[in-house]
Length: 78
Image 1 (cartoon, rainbow, N blue to C red):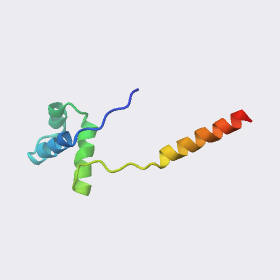
Image 2: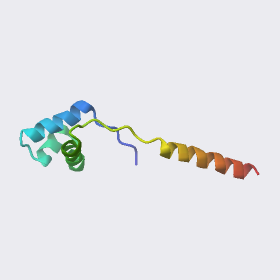
Image 3: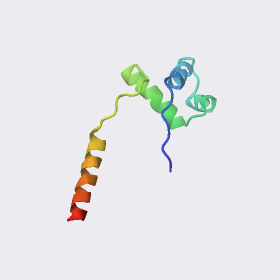
């Protein structure tokens, strides 16, 4: 299973525009060619935060992965 790409800000804003025009989630999903859970998530995020832009992601996961890989390599070389 591959990684999905982030939606553009324009596409997310278009979903909000459709929402403000009283389109159903199903209609928005068909119009924008994105899944209904994604549409629902965009609307929920907009209602809670007042914006659709993606939040910066934490680097902690990447740092822990690098640490684990280094530690594994050190243990294998001993």
